[in-house]
Length: 152
Ligand SMILES: CC(C)(COP(=O)(O)OP(=O)(O)OC[C@H]1O[C@@H](n2cnc3c(N)ncnc32)[C@H](O)[C@@H]1OP(=O)(O)O)[C@@H](O)C(=O)NCCC(=O)NCCS
Image (cartoon, rainbow, N blue to C red; front, side):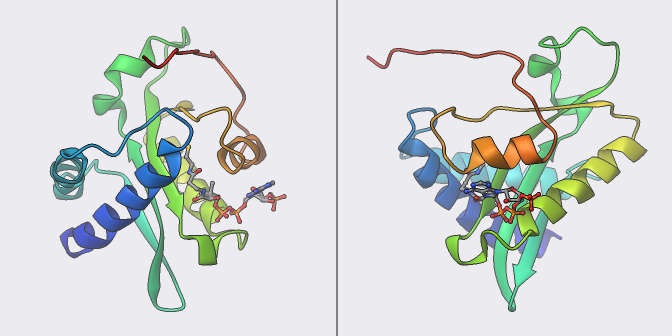
């Protein structure tokens, strides 16, 4: 729902702040505005594939997945001739973690993608992130490629 844009943006910025400690993402002056444009665009499209979960009446978790029409750059990482979707962001507020909400959102996204004929879903995660590594493994994802960067 377009009304969910503010909540999605808040949760996305919390995700970037959390991930920034692992060196993959940084919170830049333009991050909030750029995220708002991208999320607003996704919410306005039928293929937006983003979901918000509530817990105890509060916005608790968000998941955004790029539809194959918008996953072109990453699709060449696999050779199988299938539409490829890409997990753009997943975040659960600290108070709502460990209650199965992240897994429930992910299962819903998997079902929506499968119904659209998607056989492959890719995700990037930072190897030192102690929350994402076990989580994605439990959701059935396996490492495909590892990238190392030296920060200047
Ligand atoms: C990753 C994240 C979304 C998981 O959400 P969550 O709602 O806490 O996860 P769930 O409660 O649905 O857990 C699902 C499974 O992952 C496992 N898991 C979740 N966190 C874990 C942890 N810290 N250590 C070990 N296993 C963990 C659970 O045990 C559960 O396994 P099960 O299938 O055996 O029950 C959440 O920890 C988070 O927002 N982290 C910060 C942001 C982040 O890292 N996002 C991912 C970026 S790629």
